[in-house]
Length: 267
Image 1 (cartoon, helix red, strand yellow):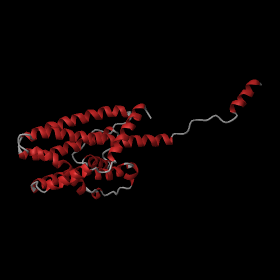
Image 2 (spheres, rainbow, N blue to C red):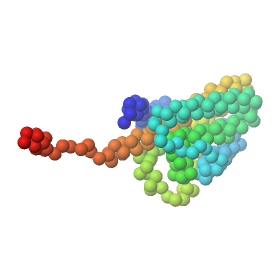
Image 3 (cartoon, rainbow, N blue to C red):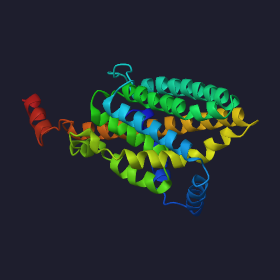
């Protein structure tokens, strides 16, 4: 394992501990507040968000509209992550700009921000997956991306459940059914909607929508980027660990070989 991989392993362990923490009192309170707020949000907005998430989820499952670069091969982890961080920075700026523009455009443009932001956030992990060397034409890899998305945008309780599924993904993916329709997109969209509603509803407030859209979009994309990096780091280091276990042990000198050689030299 390289020095960079050792450093990354320490960062990954800190992230894993954070993900696996049980829900705090604050988490439960936020969930309750969100449930109450949902009752006051117009049903048309709920329907629009739900329909958008449903279509985007299906798009990911089929791989439609998310073509990206070929998987990177023969590159060390450090070189890959230089590019990954650059792409995350690009998407954060793009999302922040889009949020500011739609937030400043009034109610209906702010509502339009939901599908636009979701499209940006879905595109980014596809690129990240390819940069870590994973072929997204395999539907199991697309399912992993959806798990990354859930890990970033779900309640703490749901995060812990999703993390357990992703912890040993290579083995877990072998048990996945061939029918991609069995993915639980309903839970996915409900968790995502509840996660972002509280922040994004403020974008509909006249006068502050632009500032809210800029900041919220930037933070949401940053959270997704960080989650994706750590999820793929987890798989990278697991694969490296497996490789090291498969390496043959170093040759050992047979007992008495040196003594025999010394006697031969003497005579």
